[in-house]
Image (cartoon, rainbow, N blue to C red):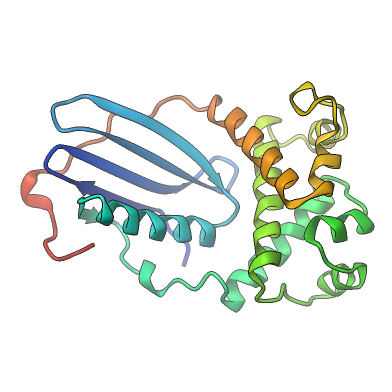
Length: 225
């Protein structure tokens, strides 16, 4: 069952919080915030997630990183992250539907869909007929980039597909007057560049959330990571 996740970490000098939460559009966003225990606030970031599974995968990465930095996990709203399998059939089923919906909303033709995912057109037809994405890390990485781009466009243009379609097909000065769609079609790096740019634009739409409530010193769960 998909549900919000909140994790709090503390060290002797600092704290860090990560919240995986649904947004107003029914998608998922990861909000991270940190600061010093003397009251100095750190940077708050909002990162749209291509899927719930991707959000959990990112949180798992944060757990390892914070532990390596000497933080202790103090509180959590959900502790089943260790059982997450990003390659599970359920995750791939959901991502198959999501990427096909992105292609449909952006009016991307079959041939270009195949180029974006680096597969054959026959594979795209198979997905449309109900086949699930293969358990292939390279393929799933491309799928998640497309989903992230689609979600960022959805947020930037308030769910207006016509404006999103126009944006990816309009020469952009940030890309040396190249069309974003052409950049996406050219290479994996092109997909990453467009995603990074759009997510930076999305960050500017969000206001800083209320101050993080720091858990008391006694709230840490010793032995957890």
